[in-house]
Image (cartoon, rainbow, N blue to C red; front, side, top):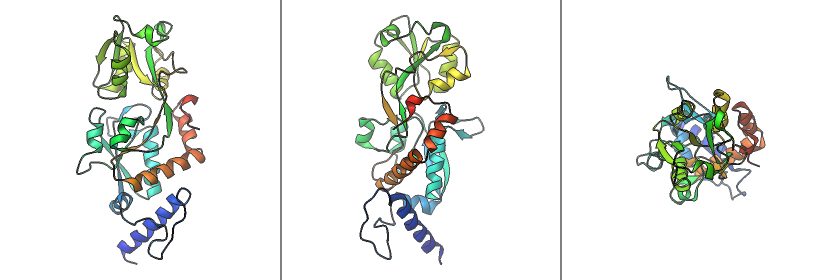
Length: 281
């Protein structure tokens, strides 16, 4: 069997596997038993043999890039599972919160999809594609443990003497500027440095999320997350990709559903110390 024919046959088998539980049966033919086209983004990825995944690498424990270029985290594990299901390897491409939208929509594309702490929003869905959620999330805070009883509401934080540190370009900065109009907003370009800045009294509060805060509380006894169980917002984290990649979106959604049903997501939550509130039912 020629290599191109073998790849086409394998792709059709893959599509059948991915979509058989989520797509109603269609009229089939010998050339295309799934009723799905053997072309599109999934076919391109399979032909390339590599899934290119954009990620910020600055959001423990969902995505982090070590100095040697090694990536780890909950979202990284999800990306590896998606690549494995597609029968390809994975390559991570660095992006950032301020440039995320531009990078996703770039032409030619620099990566096939983006992952790692990306909240599903109507704004993003208006111009891009977003998968079903694989984690629940919500805004919360980090502060010094010795002052954890000082910050029990947004009103406690929204005072001129309170220095609130955020990373630029993402939803944390947007939330802080919309909800904390009296507090002093301090922007730090490196999200991963902010918890240590709070501990060192360079700022008082970090706007973060319930997926991120527990990691830093466990790693540094000087820090606390007093509002972890009562987040200010409620949302879901998903996979972001360019419009026009509906076949890839369908494949990713199918894989996420299987990760929910087979317990993979629950096991990852336990491995990375994520709270019960991050579970999607």
